Image (cartoon, each protein chain N blue to C red):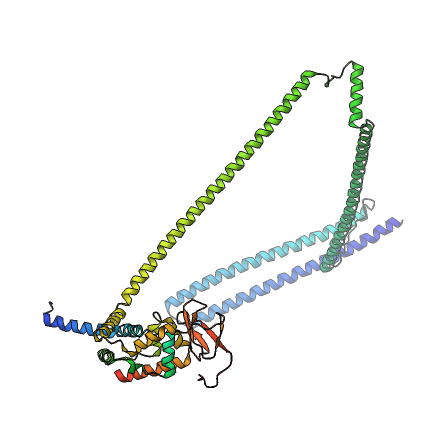
Length: 399
Length: 123
């Protein structure tokens, strides 16, 4: 009962919907058709009015008329095509209207069928699904957040894996160290045992004695060296040879020393000869230079000699050497000796003493005046101060 | 171009004159040394000359004075004749006398005075 009532409600609702759709379609088709026809008629009337107006304006240029005619023809063809299109669209609208009508009739007939056969699949499910609003920014943000979360998870997991890997590596190292320790301990034990085993053998002499004991036990007899004369002879011969070799070596060493000493002496003689040759050469060169200097000096002093010769000639021609020369001759032997004093930078001389002494610098004669306070060498310009000693005479002339 | 004999004589005269001018100091040096040697000059005699303020020009005889004058006339310029030059001239042959003139101020002054007198006489 309930199902029947439901079917009836649904069918009545369906029928109502079908009738409403049909009416709407028919109304729309009529409106569209009438509007199009009206527009076409309006356009045609306008064109006709334009043509009549242009024709009434009078006769003009035949070319312009031809152009106008051509334009009118083109416009006409356009209009005809537009009309054809309008007709086609009207036919289409008519066909759609017919189709809608057919659908409406079919729907009505369907309702009748349902009324006639209510038991054949009366339930039809129609409806729509609302997909909602899609906010892509939110979606993008959500996806980015998800990506971050995923990355974070991946990093966490990688960190955990690294931690686990490190722990495992540490464990592996520990295990390897344990294995090394174990093997090292085993080797140490073996070595310790070996050392202990060797130590238990005792010293070399003990081992040697043990070996001898073993050899004796095996039948080996030790040779008696002291009692063998041939061996003693051999030993003496060896000692003799050794002494001879030692003496020979000593002689050779002495000979080498003597040879070395002779070589040293020869080198020293050679050096001395070379030195003497150098000295002789130097002396020869020195003599040569001095001879050359004398020659140069002689040449340079030629005018001086000339002057001297002139003066000498004059003096001898006149035969009078002058009173001064005689006076000088008489005075020369009574030349005062050099005053006593140190020959150095300072000399001591009595008041009024004059004379000559050797220059401390170049050994050339150095003169001291009776009241001089300093003596100057004419050759090397050495200055020697003079300190007067003794009692100062008041009548002496001071400089 | 060959040089004729009179020209040669003239050029020889010019050459000898120039040679004398050039060599005058050396010639005068030789003369002075020879005069000192003739008088057997020593430190003692030189000291006596200085102490007694002996005139060197006056000790020269007339021929020596004429010779010096003649030389000065030939040379013309005797600016090189001074006390230092005299000391330098006698330095090699009379080192002690030269040393006396160098170290003893009174002797040096005396020598300067004598050189000035001689220059005036021959000039």
